Image (cartoon, rainbow, N blue to C red; front, side, top):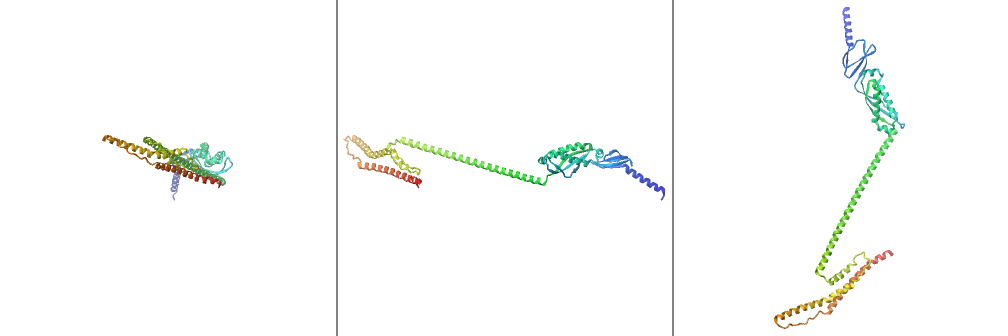
Length: 364
């Protein structure tokens, strides 16, 4: 082969190599740190970039997008001397590629160790109960410490989250028992509250029922009393309007006597002192009524005959009128007395019959 051709081929290869070494294409969201003869020169931005061949070289390739780093569970001791395993999730972003490459040797390891140290300081001042219920506070304190420390590394910590807090198995079992007891307690309280409300409502219903029944009975008694008062008033007015004489009242008095001892609750029966006066009144009534009636009839007939004789111009004719026989009047009076005495005897017998079982009951 001709030496000239070989030389041209070598020159072409060198040119191609130099062009390839000169042109650098950086993808979007990437940053390349360039060193010239071992010293930091500049950071290449996304797009087409030119460097000095052989003199410039790419030291680090960094991704400036937000990154997620999940740490392994680390043991942490709480204030009440309980060991819990806590793993965190870190969201960070590189803001200064030069500082991220030259200010810290391994920024991920540095962030992880700083997270563990800060977490132990924060959890060490809390007990287990506070640790489990204060995640937001722990996250905010971690983020403040990490953001302040990683700022000079060219890294911004956007968010820190506690992914899990795992207490020991015995503590988990005790917590489950405690939660079960709390649920049972709330269930018992709710059940008791329900029974209380049910009893209150039942008592209120019974109270309203008794009140309504009492009001109904009261209204019924008032209406009944009003009716009886009106009936008595009507009877009283009728008696006064008809001008009833004592004979009728005495007879009604005797009719009422047998009903005085009709109740089963009567243990003794008192005979009114007016009984004899009522009997005398009835006797006089039966003894005088025929004579009074005959006298009135005789007077009416004599008046009629006198008027007839005056009309005829003659002398009035008088006829003898015979009064009813005294035996009939006496028999009527005796009959009334017998009925009254029989009514009194019946009332006494009923009262004694009702009293005898009650007196015999305590002795038996």
